Length: 293
View 1 (spheres, rainbow, N blue to C red):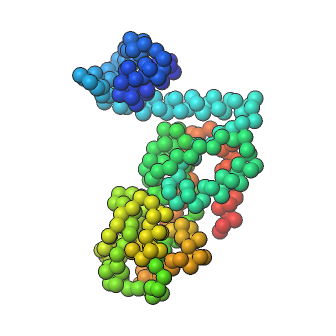
View 2: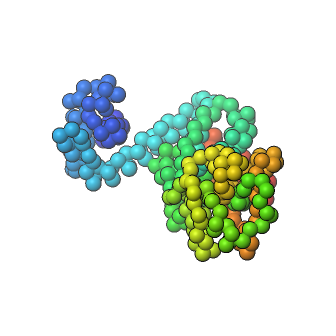
View 3: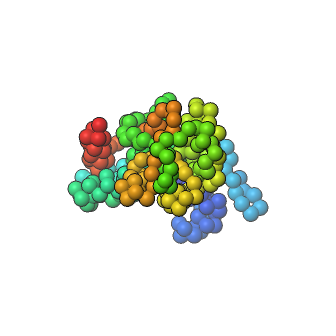
């Protein structure tokens, strides 16, 4: 089994086409077909089924694709790790959710980039489930997530804790009862998103039924709508810190509700080889985290 075969298989699966994969690899379509057939012969299982105008992976192909992604990602990391012995340049691939991507990573990476300007930095953004899947596939080095499964075979380091506040236009009272809150127009993240799941779970513990009038993907849009009096919303304190300082919005307390906080965790594979670029970033992150407590 050769890496070129694995790369071809992954590309065919991604493109769902032998001809498109051939164009990208600058090979003939028969050459692509031979590589896949040789791979299937070695494995003793059919990986791809062709239909009239499309192709699909077999169950064996789906399983093998997961391993293929890990092997190719690990191979890339191995090459990068070896290069550090004769080059000063390293790499750092990070995944994070919306709040951390917008409000934390810029400052953290600015300090890191100033100290290690030769390091290539790449960021992938998405919800916790997506980031964790990238970590498991070795597609990224480190993940910042807010939802974890303690049974997962990953290193898990608690980091930042964000207070979740009820943000309103100016002029609201300093405190509101849950009964009155149920009558207010709430602007929330879309159903199914990580932050919405967090809120829905908390609402359930309070036996609270929200009146949701808008579901948005953008935190900035939610803040803007609140500023313009179109509703109220729950957001991390770090996301509205600037608006609070400028007094363009305000926050209010909810009577008899306990404080709402959301934990961010740093995750990475237990078998991960930590190159100097990753180790130095981890050291910086943990130092910042310890100073914030």
